[in-house]
Length: 277
Length: 131
Ligand SMILES: [Zn+2]
Ligand SMILES: [Zn+2]
Image (tube, rainbow over all chains, first blue to last red; front, top):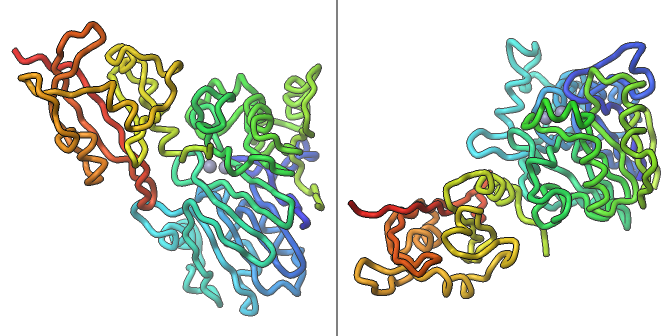
């Protein structure tokens, strides 16, 4: 499978000269094998994915982790939604009261957006998920609720022997007992265990996290400990706080890894990065 | 051991932060967690016992009526909640750590995740001596 990062910023797009190397678009990953295309989240990054997408792709599966604005804001700007020859499937978390369709409809309605879902040439096909397992082409997908405000899913995507795990918004400290020692009591463990590549929330430095406990995100220190607990092969730290510049992100990573050895690779995720495995 | 669902993890985290005694069970009634305040009543440490199968902890926690007669399981709020998946409430007597008989009141409620996943139950209890 081929994976491309179209956005890895958290909470709010953050364009600007100080954010050139990690990028400013919010959450969006493209996962491809031949004609099968999975898109993880529809943050502002999905706009460019739509523009540069192979014209041969006729079916697109968009898997939303949750409906926070930074993960959905790009939907209305995703050109394939306006192409009558393309079929779009939208997946997202169930809630206890309102259907996923209705919750997505709120985005496609006044005063937030001028186009309604019913105005699109093809109404997207909606799939509600909870603790689910299903297949799309060569991909085997597992979803699970993880610790973040509002219904939020983590995704584990298996392709042959390879596993990619995606949890862009996840607060480890609140979602774990005895963190980071007890996998049985750690939110997201089943999603990430032994993944070849884990994209995981590491929005904050530790001192930033201390000011924002309960907001649903993790400190880089905790993200690294979680990756270690899950024995992943590679960790790509995701959902960079919009006010953290390239320089600050490099510094946060340096402080967390300097003088230590880990049995896996660690990086700060960069918009535009491509992974093939 | 597969990891617990988020709702049970958060249930444990919540209970862990409370000073009212409480315990958390799975759908079979196996004890997954009890908090520090419950440790004081049971005379056991969660760190030492860990979770307990239903058969095991039923022998530790022996609820009685006011006359000291053992109560049948189906009269206990937690057992009722596990059977009906709705909250239940009641009072009973247990022997505390010092082998004194104390009256406690229990409120049990089911843990049902989104959209409709039954995962277990939580019970809170407190001393409720009659005047
Ligand atoms: Zn987010
Ligand atoms: Zn979020």
